[in-house]
Structures are given as C-alpha cells and as structure tokens.
Image (cartoon, rainbow, N blue to C red):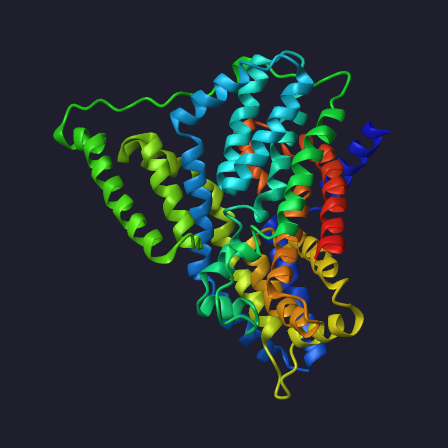
Length: 446
C-alpha cells in the first residue's frame, strides 16, 4: 500500500509540478487577473502596481540569501564534518540511522535553515558510508523532514522580521504592525514550543516505520566527501589569505560588537543579528578568511532562486495591495472574506492551510510573507487574533508544504546526489503527519 502511494505521488509531481520560476509567473498572472476582476482596475493600472512592487524587496532578498549561504558555509566547516563522521560511526542499525538522521535534520533546521539543509545531507552521506543496508533515499528524506520546523526556529524569517521592526515590517503586515514583536511571542511562545516538541517526537518514529524491507543502498565510494585542500603559501599574498591572525582580529572585532549589542539591547534577535552570528561563527569554524570565502562561494548556487524570484514576489505584493479609487484591492477583498467566514478560533487554521497552499507557488518564507502578510495580518486583527499568532500560522504553513515543494530540497539533493523523485514519496507521508500535528496545535493551543 505504501509503495503504491509513493509511486502515485511521484508520478503526480513529475507530471504536474513545474519549476518554481514558472510557478511564480503563473501566480503573478492569476493575481493580475484577480486584480482586474475584483477591483475593476484596467490592465495598465494593474501593470503599474506590479511594476511598482518588483523592486520593493531588495534588502529582504539579500537577508534571505545570506541566511542560506552563511548556514551552508558553517555546515561545511571541517570541525562539523568530523563531528558528523564520528556520530555516524556509532550507528549500526539501519532504522537507528533513520532516526538519528531525522533528529540531526530537525536540530540543524531549528538552529538555521541553511545549516540544517546542508548538515542533514552531509550526515546522511556519512551514515550511508558506515551503515550497511540502510535505504539511502529514505535516509536523505529523513534528514530533509527536519526542514519542516525551520520557521519555528532561530532563523525563521517571519518571526525574525517581526522582531526586527521598521518600515519593512509595516509594509509586509499591511500596516497592522508599527512596533517590533519580541521572540517570546513567536518562536518561544508556548504553543510554538509544543508543536515543535510533538514533531521532534513523532517524525523520527514515522520515518523509522517507513524503512522498506528491500532498501535502496548506495556505493560508499560514490558519496565520498572531498576534503578541503589548502593552497600552497608561496607568496606573501597567499600567506595573508590563509592567515589565522587576520581571522582572529576580525573575530575579536565582531565579539566586541556583539558584547556591546547584547548588553544594550538584551536578547533581541533580528534577521541581521542572526545572519551576523552565523557569519562569524562560520568563519571561526573554518579558521581563515580564504577557507571561509571558498565555503561561501561553493554555496552561492543555492541562492539563485532567491535572486531571481524575489522581484516577482514583490510584484505580486504590489498587485495584491494595489487599490482602486475606492480603496478596494485584492488584499482588502480577501481580508473581508476571512472576516465574514472565519472566527477567532478557526482563523489561525485558515491562515496555516492557506499558507501551505500559497507556499507551493511561492516557495520562500520571506516571499510568502510579502504576498500573504498584507492580506492575512489585517484580517486576523479584524477578528481579534493576535498578529503574532497570524504570522506564525503563515510561517508554519510555509514550512509545512516544503515537504512536497522541492525548491529548498535542491541544495540537499545536490549534496546527496539524488533527484527529487527519489524522496518525494516519503515526503508525502511526512507532509500528512506534520500537517495533522500543526493543525491540531493551532486549533487547540491558541
């Protein structure tokens, strides 16, 4: 039964799921047509709203790109790889390997989503080299399943955007928020911690149960991780490039900055602070500026989707919020729909499920908030739902359907040497289980 479901899901995805770039254009056209029909504005006016929004998310896109590359570079530090190899050498059972792979993916994604994706793939390869008869596609899927919690963790773009504040937050929230919301109301809120705990307990068990009787194994020689080879230091310039002294001076400067920041602001984590922490922790793990630069350079390919797609997310945001002479926009119409059809109890679930649907078209937490924030935040406020709850419902919806949207799996799959088709059947089961847990959390706990 499970294999039939797996095969059916793979065939469905392969047949009907276009690329993320094509998805963003399809959603643009749907929003454009909806704007014309719902607001009565002509096509030239709507094109003006679209063009006005195209370049509105430059700073946000840069922040998202840096979250990914700094997490990637840290995960590729030699000290991290040695730790993962040591941990993998203690595992002997295939099912235990699946459980441990899940837990490492969960822990990594909770710390930083870019780090979680890369460390999960590296650890899956380490396990596959050391544990005979473990199903390699499931091992990689188990590592990727940890990504479902990323938006409830330290690098969640939506809660960190809320805690950063500023004009960008006011724009993304449809004018609802003018002051920052602390992490105590989002990442560290009791309902969020309970959802996290439930997933951490349940997902390893579910993944373990999915291990097939006839596993698909991989030749360890095919997944060997190439060690870093330092360049020869024959010139003063090369010696300076690979100097630990220069790195230490930079790290001391960063340390003084963070001591001053936290002593002045307390434990207030915004996007820029988290990015900076991972940048300098990654540099410390690599030891020299040259080695860290090479690690970042190797991860740059992962930001291609962010660089290309974020302007179109901004354009969709412009279409959604572009109002006619009477102040009617798609955002205001959708807000009115939710106000009329949802209650304070059901709205967080509505927000979560709708965010899961939108994420299939907009596979980015930051881009998703740009599209949904101006719509859902005012609707939630009109129903007396806390803006922090609405924002976290959107955040969890974004993370949830990443299990069947392969956009963010691409860096992990590239490292693991697999195609998305190899893990999609397992991910569909993870989607169903995690969706039930998160829905129950927002229905019962908020």
